[in-house]
Image (cartoon, rainbow, N blue to C red; front, side):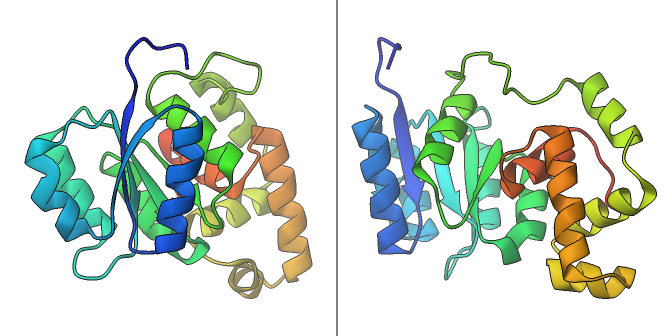
Length: 207
């Protein structure tokens, strides 16, 4: 890591495997990591914590990720929060970004994706040709999508799975996959999580 001070991360996830795997990946990358198995435990400890970034699961018992996000933003407004989301949680992930989350990671969690998202959230990502398109570039790509591609994108961002999108639009799931792949390619999104983040932060209206 190029920073003189070690970056402090808090991981909040009730799944032991996910939490411990994330911690291992990030510690190997020289981040200082503290983990919590519930949102309740994390919120209790929050007054004594000073994280540079929080990685937070969306679905947890007692207190879900959105509730924890609200409290974090009240007390540590500038601390970036990264949500961990399964495909079925896309609607919640979109809402989280709209209300202050910096990004989200899609399950199953990929080590390379985690490091990239954390670096970006902490301000350590270098500018590369793989960066998100600018606002103007993003709008230009959206404007060039076909009517059908736009319809597919709206439903995907709302959280509909391929088979649901196919049923709503009267097309086959395979056709939905083709449209989804083409949209991701045009926007330069390497994962569905990246696609959703780009559309939300780019102001794309799914309604």
